[in-house]
Amino acid sequence: MELPDIGEIGLLSLSDLLHAKKTQREKDWPMIRRLVETDIAQNQGKTSEQQIIFWLKECRTPALLAKLAQDHTDLCKQVVVHRPLLKAALAQDINGLEGSLYAEEKREKEKDREYWQPLRMELEQWRSQRKLRNRA
Image (cartoon, rainbow, N blue to C red; front, side, top):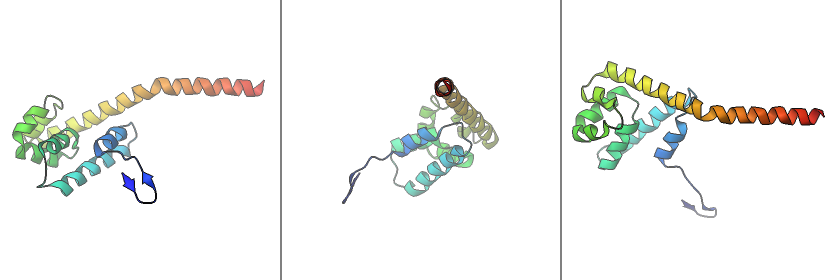
């Protein structure tokens, strides 16, 4: 984005921001939910197929996801391959959808833990070595 008197600045797309928020931190997950809800509310009625697919892949609000599935059944059937919990959305099974969303969140948190674990260990080794050098 180009701003007067400042110049060009980089921005994250909503998709990139959501990806960055999928962490093990509890406070990130309600934010993901709110960001998608807001995007849906602001863009109702002026959506592209690509936008609806994005919502089907990222929405974390059971009732809203069920409504999207009901309103866009054909697209939902395409996306279910990538996000199996959409089967519950297609069936309008809100309880099943809530459980599936919870399980999905739990898997994402675990993936984030697994990603950071070796980096944390490396950082701890570096800190330990640095302390030893400072004592010598």
